[in-house]
Image 1 (tube, helix red, strand yellow):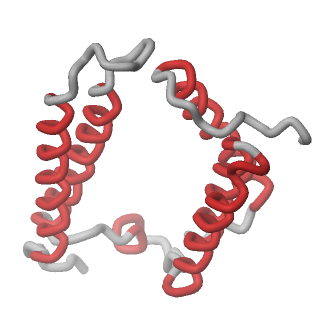
Image 2 (image 1 turned 180 degrees about the horizontal axis):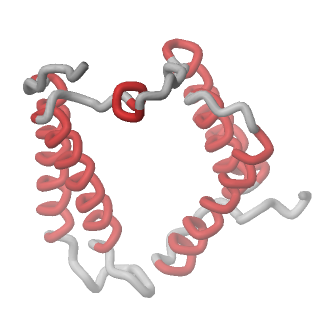
Length: 164
């Protein structure tokens, strides 16, 4: 049985808001002086990248809202899927990850703190493989660290602290 397709105004508002934020960020990035203080990439590169990402997400959400709202995999594939966990418990895990990252980043280094944040956030969104999530967090944090420290010359907390 197919569901009737109609526009979901709340989701369309979220998508349109992301598109507006993307445009505002791109306008702000265009005002950055290109020659100021960064070693390899100009100051405008990362805001442009975030603006493009927000624009793509905003357009995707808007298209889904116009087409009847977010797709539910159980309806699309015909197989039963479990609902995503989350709610207050998931929000607590993500918040705890942010707090742990903020408290430990100067003690254990950028990469390990970011990996803990990723693992806590993944747990909050329903993952039950903390070792795998921690490894993925390290794999994601290393290029970010190198991009910011080498590419932009931004002084981040050390990769890992000397005592580790």
